[in-house]
Image (cartoon, rainbow, N blue to C red; front, side, top):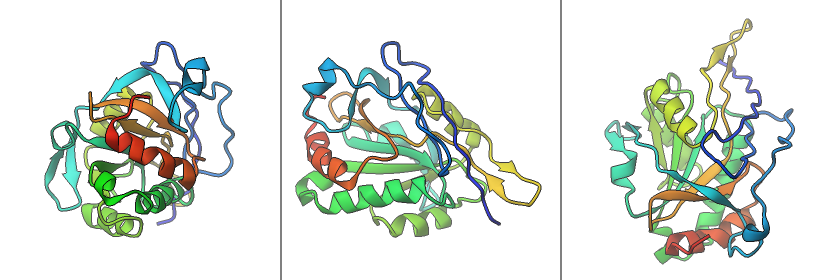
Length: 221
């Protein structure tokens, strides 16, 4: 069944001193005016992504992985570098582009660093994104990427805790399905399991390739 995504622009609910620009799947949206957390502090960062002045806790989230088993995000990724992205497999642009760019960048990272990084994709369209569908889709980018699917209310709550807006999929009159979600990637450091760096949907492969070794080593943002 065809899906026609649309854009959302929202604000980071918990960031007290920073504004996060949120976008979603679709080619028609424009970036929010509250674009980013670029500051004097950020200019001294070793990262090319945007350092966050408010550090988000990793969501307390248990869903089903692509093997059909329960996956406790906090427990399974504790003490590891995590790149977390919310999206859906039928997204025509932002989702495959983002995951593809991360996948290419991961191949440029030394194996020692790559083994310390978990890339986690959480489905915003769990009714259609079964574990098998997720695994097949993720394998086209990197066979080590982690896919999670399950209760949409849990997904929405987890996303909200990070300032990411996720809406219920909508069935349109023509039978297509719209799945709207924030399209940024959050990077969690292994030192405290908190998100320290933000990557917007137009982040290039080169930016990810530059930052991934720093993230793997837990370099402060």
